[in-house]
Image 1: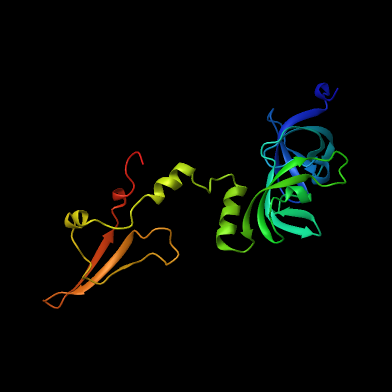
Image 2: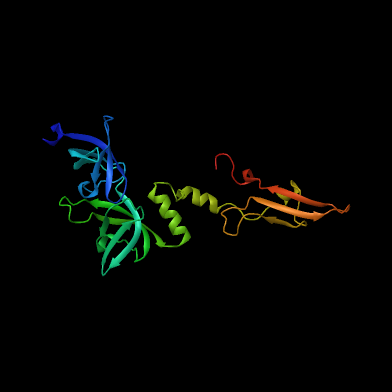
Length: 234
């Protein structure tokens, strides 16, 4: 009956705050405000069916009666373990619920870790929490790499290289051959220093400085030949 209910509208969830979201109707009509306790645990981008309930402040309001498509049922946040049970509150402040992680779904993650969680079960009574499992732990929250990888995971960005790329990169030699040195100008006897910080992933810009015989100072700008290592097809 719900699918034929003329008082319902299909739309996409746009989370606004921990208190409410907007459902953007696919027919182009006005956005519908839905309070989060009536969202049926829908997340950003989910497709839902909303029953109109009236208006508030001149804006239509409604309740989600059905989640038709869960776009990406995952959250990223810090794991809290109480006894053997885990709980994760999303780092995204717009996510309005915690996930419950039973012991068998912790997958080695520890209290205080930053984790990515897949949501597996969504309660229908509105009084319980969605049940999830830890997909991966990024390590203790607060660590630079853990926080960066968690942000990338939250937005669905890749933060791991394919295995084949890892294997190929390990085979790159870290010794420059005499033949390669002979093809290039050698600045090793001139004071040359990188301008990248010591925690950079690559060192590809440098400056050199020396005083010439005429008393002038020469500043050299050095740009790495990245194509020496990153070749077409590799």
